[in-house]
Image (tube, rainbow, N blue to C red; front, top):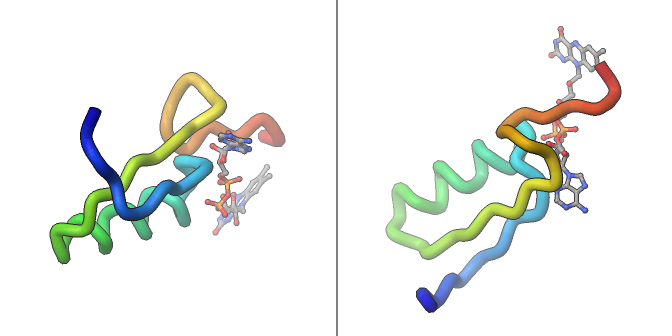
Length: 44
Ligand SMILES: Cc1cc2nc3c(=O)[nH]c(=O)nc-3n(C[C@H](O)[C@H](O)[C@H](O)COP(=O)(O)OP(=O)(O)OC[C@H]3O[C@@H](n4cnc5c(N)ncnc54)[C@H](O)[C@@H]3O)c2cc1C
């Protein structure tokens, strides 16, 4: 299994934006999403 430095819970716009920024600096990041897709929004 790969090692990650940061775990983000939720692939909403904020989680994805942070993951993208961290990846720019080669920081290992994993994103966990409860929904079936990125930007999953049960409220809409
Ligand atoms: C009906 C509606 C319309 C909107 N329209 C606009 C608009 O026109 N313009 C605008 O700027 N903003 C709009 N907003 C607001 C905008 O959706 C939010 O400000 C924005 O989505 C917040 O982003 P976020 O990443 O913080 O959270 P979210 O987008 O809510 O993302 C959170 C993610 O985390 C996931 N998650 C939650 N709990 C867990 C868990 N335990 N484990 C794993 N994953 C989990 C969810 O499935 C979701 O994908 C609207 C909101 C609603 C409800």
